[in-house]
Amino acid sequence: MDRRSFLLTGAASLALSRAQAQMNMRGMSGGTMRGMMGTRRQIVPLPEGEPFRELPKLANQSSKPGTFAAMLTAAPGTARFINGLTTPVLAYNGQSPGPMIEVTEGDAVAIQFVNRIGDISTIHWHGVPVPADQDGAAMSPVADGTGRTYSFTLPAGFAAACWYHPHPHMKTAEQVYRGLAGAFIIRPKVDPVPAAYGDTVLQITDLRLDADGSMPDDTMIDRMNGRVGDHLLINGLKNPVLAVDAGARRRFRLLNSTNARFLRLSFDGAPFTLLGTDGGYMEAPVPGQSEVFLPPAGRVDVVVDFAAPGTHVLHTLAYDHGWMGPTRPDESRQNLLTVKVADTKAAAIPPLPSTLRAIEPPGAPIVTRTLVLGESMGGMMGGMSGGGMGMDMTINGRTFDMNRVDLISKVGQVELWEVQNPTDMDHPFHIHGNSFQVRAFVDLKTGTVTPPPRRALLDVVSVPRGQAAQLLVRQMLPGLRMYHCHILEHEDMGMMGLVDVNA
Ligand code: C2O
Ligand code: CU
Ligand code: CU
Image (cartoon, rainbow, N blue to C red; front, top):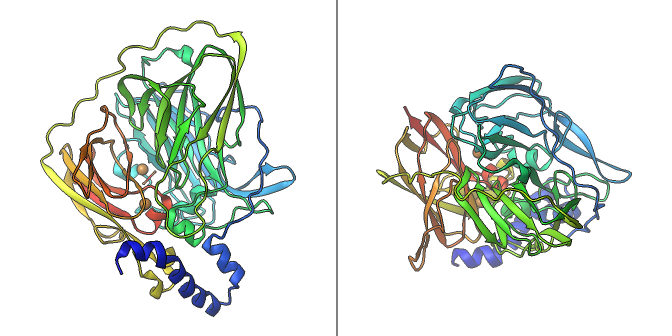
């Protein structure tokens, strides 16, 4: 049978029967099994419409200019999403999402991490160009009850909305969906965008709750597709309400810190002006966008125009990213944020600058690499060890091994990475260490080449099924770097590799 139809028609039932046999051996009930397969659940409604709240900031303990020092303790905590029900979560400094870190380009940063979650963890600084040994990668786990300090100096010229999250081997997905993720905003010394636009971070998380208020474990369907929860939250709230004046133009940084959501977002017709992506500003503002797209882990920097009185809801639009097995959730029309535009006129603000910065073309690649993403059934005979529950997620046919170097590179070398996706679903591909530029997407069947509409710096790109993404990659710091699918379940199941960047 060809692989595609095997995956589409046979996989779920085969996996179910094999897994069922194993469960029975392990004394688990059919009910548990159905739960693990991800049978449709009753969605517990969450209160909506509370006032919007900004993310709390992590206080800087250092008074020395140009330095940022703080402590982050990861530990179990509780949240209250539904009145009368307590939800056990994992939190940084008691908060989920974690406190927002706000620093300036060129700052020397020292963050003392204390791990009290009861398992290994790390803090990875997603998108931040930090030295390899400060990157919080799986190769440097921090044991429960211990800590370490992450210290790095931010390069001049790099300002962007990044984030932080755990990256322990095979445990990243669970630690993130249970609450460990926070925003990491690097401001430029001089911002070309006037302060009158404001600057509000909208951190998007994905919550799934059982009727008792607890978060259920990942199911087999979650492992295959990535966890898609019941509720999208903004800064920890479901569809909060933000009031603005008519004619207001507001700057938002959207951060997708969900495990696996491909977010196609509209503001009910309020137009977006795109200012920046993962790696900071575009070359010039791009006005007149009716929607934005954020793959898992992606960020955009936008200005939204609220011209006339009324209500604008930030919500998801339908997006087909491929799905394996049954119980495909409906991911369209989920409301994230309600903006109420008052009758009062907003004060006039200066226009946006016509240019933001230059993005240098990376130059001609001197090395070309091919990375083929893969999904394969068959781990099941080996039992449930590894957490894959019957599936391997691979790059070039291999699952992640932290003791194996997959690629050898060199500091400053421009490389073309062709990331091919012959699988049945889209995979968001992420590289540690430095941002990259997309040269083009290539259709694997027809060979049609589609360059991106404009230059942009990314650290994660959605590689649609049946296509390849050609990435221009250039690492500027030596050491071992991970690259992987940012559907966190896929990363945990092995769709990850290591590049050793030599000095
Ligand atoms: Cu967001 Cu390897 O990380
Ligand atoms: Cu990363
Ligand atoms: Cu993936």
